[in-house]
Image 1 (cartoon, rainbow, N blue to C red):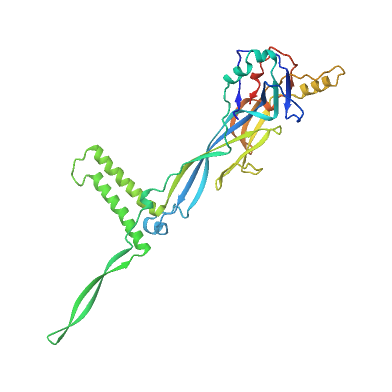
Image 2: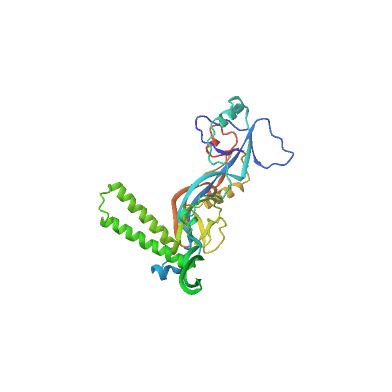
Length: 366
């Protein structure tokens, strides 16, 4: 069912026949022409951007200090999270605790009220499931995914071979080459030697030892490729970090408690929509700037009068300006300033037969 917030001002609502709060009992019978509306409530859409940082240990990390003198390296594979940004946006939703059916009067039927109502719908919030999140991950660079080094090397073994030639015994020096498996340290040493060669080649290029007048574009390209190659080989020792940007979205509706858990976040576990009451929880605080209690007390006294008659017109609720903040502990993470919030306003019942009142300015139409 499409939920829409209607704010039209070019027509006036004629006197309604009856306004009934839903649900009704099974004996109630509606007329053939009616519409249903709900009082609006203000929700807050919270968009959270989290950086997921994946630290990957280098395959030669155990030899980083010995061969390259590197100590500040990634020593184990792990994932950490940082909170990049938070934004809060107010949205209008129907309050399903206050839904009413309105039977059209004869004047409304004559003026084609329903046609005008539905032709001028303005969508407030699309249907969505919350929480939602958008995640796109960066792959491990191809250099590290597909890096391979020969697992064997050729080793020459010298020995003395005994030969008998024409009945004479001779000791003849000989050698043979065989393939042996490299140790991890030998592989690491070859990678370290490659780093040393890259640095020497770069220095030779910068010093102009080739005595070649390279074009600036070609020269810069060669330097960039050598820098990138050195970075990749150092990553085999120092490890590397891949940072992914993850977007989350939750919708929070503040109740009368004013303080509502929104979500939780930690550097080890990241984002969670389950905003339990812990030190890691972020809270939405909504503080009304004035109290409707005096109005409620006055209305209560008015109802106690002997001649009081309960009106049966449109129910409306006007918003109350509230100071809205997203807090983590005592820190304000995001401040919206003053924002109109419907659910903190008093529900009023207007007299029936109010021809000049436009309820569409106060209603979410079903």
